[in-house]
Amino acid sequence: MLTLPDIDITSRTTTFDRGLTVAGKLNVAVCTPPLSHGSARHRDGSRSTLVLSERVEPSPDPTNATKGSSMDIAHQTSALYMRTHLIGASGGLQLARLVAHDPWTVNAIDHLPGELEQEMAFVRTRVEELSGHRESWLGAVVGVGTGVRGVAGVVGLTRGRFRRVAALEAMRSLLLAKKAMWELGMEGRVDFGPGTARCAELDQQAARQAEELQALHRRAAEEAFTRGG
Image 1 (cartoon, helix red, strand yellow):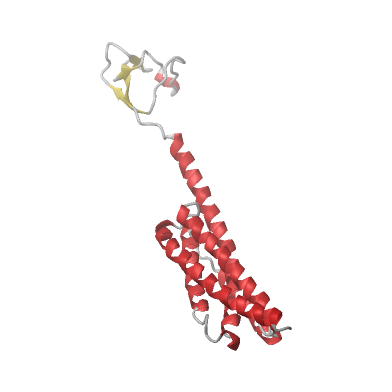
Image 2 (cartoon, one colour):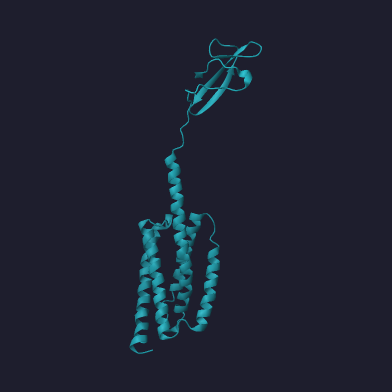
């Protein structure tokens, strides 16, 4: 218990000695009848004692705030990186559908569009966990990509020997870029949270997808450059 010296409580203000530092919260109680020490005088001449009991509470650890701020930045950086890949993946999905539906591929990559859709859903879920809100913009991006795919189908983007080579090269480049994201997830540089373990599985899947497209690319290049255009 900490008892203050005589103070005039009629002014309704209390001044502490500048050399006194009290940490934490103070519980204030006025005790009557008057005591012989540490009392205050009322207008009617009676005295009361102002008693302050000290309750010390720990100060917030500034390092916790710093850690929380750093964690938020890391989360937002990962979310931004994943959004960039989702934009690229939406275009890659439409291109994969075009390539897969080309009779020339002989059903070799019919499974590819479905796999890409599942991967995009996985990444989108994690972005929403990190950002705390739904990434509704992705539906609009995919919608635009669908329109582009329709136009590309009309003009025959994957038809013709040289155009087919270029389409397969673009598709394989997108897959390798996606593989790089899984690698960063496996290293913990990109925050996939509980889904980090799945990054290894998706990395292997991306490697297999790239090999399948590479085989088609070799075939397309042979037709385009060996047999003439």
